[in-house]
Image (cartoon, rainbow, N blue to C red; front, top):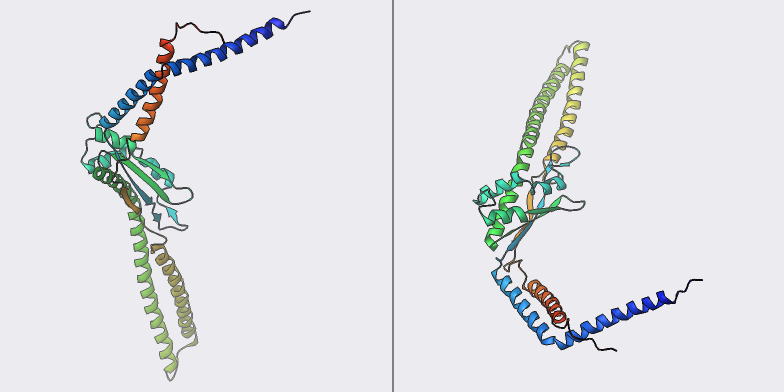
Length: 292
């Protein structure tokens, strides 16, 4: 019959060893607290120095409303997801850089590199809004670069919207001309019928009926053109058809968005404490452990 006592003893020894290790660590921390404190102070000071040498960055943000095309049912010029993805594409970024007067090669200018890295857009959920942000090395540049990127997207959308708006305007012009012609023809036919009715001898029955039928058809045509014109004008309203536009003005806070001093100091504090503990354990590595 196997004996299980040795394994139990081994487990107890492992637990004791772990407890002894933790106890030894705590003893080293108490004994070397001055060294640990020095490490924390040095690391925190180094973090503060690194923060002061890191270039400040300002963040600009704005909200776009994607325009709608003059079609039924109303359709966005481009889905919000596609519009947001355009800001990640070099083509739009290049247009923004040229407009902002920056070189296209990010390896030659940190401002270009920062714009390409930070220009981001987030589509709104179940809305036609897109939130756009970018960072720059000054508040003014952040606003300027974001405006350039937004104008690049608006230009692309306007190029899609323009031919459809021209087509809508042409349809309205044709409708107006047809309405004028139909109204004039109706007036002429009514004059013919009125003249025939006032004539002493009258006119033959067949031409009279034909003129009456033509006048009725003109009335139907005018009603149809009136309905069509109402639909076209409704499409032309700002409620149903409009270009992509900025609905929330470009904003950049006066204070830089990064780097955050509190984050640098917190990281320095943590790293300094860890370095101090490691140093304390290293200095006490050969110290004889006293039994409990």
